[in-house]
Image (cartoon, rainbow, N blue to C red; front, top):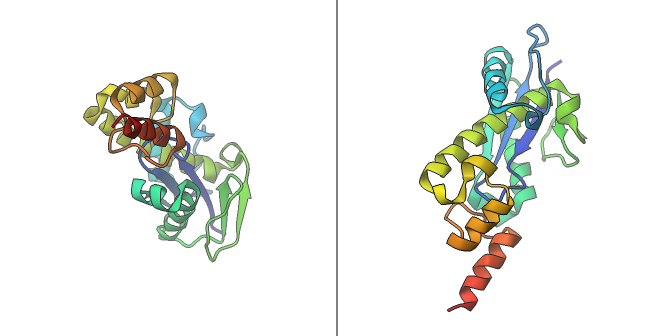
Length: 192
């Protein structure tokens, strides 16, 4: 039986899209230290991501683009990317476990598990793969837009990110439909 774990990262961010991974682990190849990616150091996540890619039976990473997030809303864009990630596996799973409380529209038995990234190793693996991939893109965006400090907050609205947004306004990678960003844009329009 092939069990797949699915998780996303970036859903609560104010920048860019949402990264989703689906992963089927090999029960004969153990990977030590799998847990919620947020509970691991960046270095450990990167090490585990390489090991997961090497040992998993199948894995897939998909992105709900900024445009999809803006058009469909973040939840629907995430569910679409989840479906694409599961469909991107070269082994069709018998069961899909998704972190959270929402399920994508797929033709495979699936179960949503709140805090599943700490409970189901395949979800933990998917969490790590998605986070490492998204963090790479956040580092690239920081090179283009260093004034926002994206390398530190990864697009989440920290105090420093909000201060940078107020000073510089949103960049093209910001989610214009995200309420705090939208309010800043509305204030800028009022000035003209």
